[in-house]
Length: 90
Image (cartoon, rainbow, N blue to C red; front, side):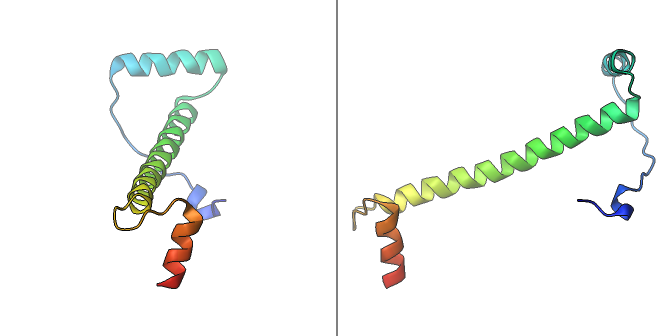
């Protein structure tokens, strides 16, 4: 949830390629929205996608690291439970 001050709007100027503005204008007519609504929703979607990408990239790295630990030549750990036990005992 956002605070009222976070929801306050601020004007920003930006330049868009004409073809993109034409596509936005098509949506404005088709869905009875204004440009701001469409651009805000597009930005929110982009930011959410980037946050998810960062999260899953980090998760993937963690899985790879765990896999490396589980298959270490010195100790063959067969499961996550064995790894947890090993970490608890050290």
